[in-house]
Length: 452
Image (cartoon, rainbow, N blue to C red):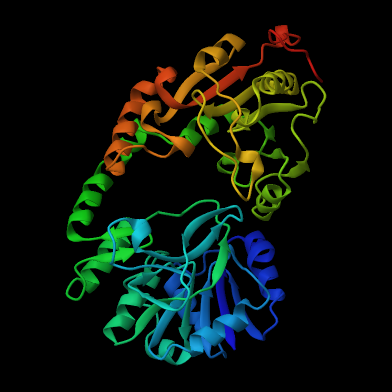
């Protein structure tokens, strides 16, 4: 039997993502959840060590609140796989080896990210040794964990306790394995707060045995830590110079209490803004299911955005992020006209600068790009336009940096964003805001009809 141990700070994630995937399992299991919304435990290691004392199963599975087990036989099959590994110290579904140059070459395992795209897709056909495992799901034999609990003194936060465990069991002549099982990870974002501190602790704890540590959050060496140390010193300045575009969105939506999110998708940036009431609209029902599980919006409508209508001034603001390029030009202009009528204060949109090649995804046929929009076009309509996310000429299909080494050109693109913000025609993407002129509410866009 497997004892499933989870610490959650979002009850909705636990109830809507992890719990249903456990309830359909055919095999017997023990569930040990802990509601940490009051921050009773200050670290993952201390919480999991405490909860493990209640475990009765042969194996202890430490799993995040936003993980979904794929299939009714997931636990049964996993236990059978684990029983076949003689030197098992700890197992997981994704991990990193030292072999290979790029992160993709080092990666092992499969994770279906947010139910729509493979974020981690280098599957294994049998249990495969790795140096470290991703901590979203790890499994430890109970008899091993009784001898080697998590180090809650060194790792007194929420990062790298699993990597430390993998290296620790290695020193005890046991192995870390990625097993041929798949999960869906539905996290909206990655928490990186304090991550550098625990990278340092991990390296200095194990530096005598490992001068290079490969983790799912990057490779750790003395040189890489020096680079990150310098970066940490200048991080406040870096964030001032290169803010995330969501900072502009937060600023524009400040004071807006009702927002319509057109083509919201599964992971809308509106989740980073404090909005009292928001309505998410999307043609893809799977995207709405994902969004609902994370409670991003107050309400949802599953409909083609070409067909939806609302009365004039129904919302204070309308957001349309990365949607226009999926419509032909005529449909896009009609949608802009409709959004201007629906909003009482402003319309905000983001879109690639010009046409960006993107074919439909196998799991989402609506992702194909049909049109391109330039800053001059949006300015003529009445939008204030700024450039975001770097320089256009450096990005290729699906927005991937075209040149190597990519880390250098990514940094170059970021530096260029200082100029691109004010000269949007050279930017990779556009951030545009239409402030509603109440004295001209009946304005029509040239070449379109008003559709209310």
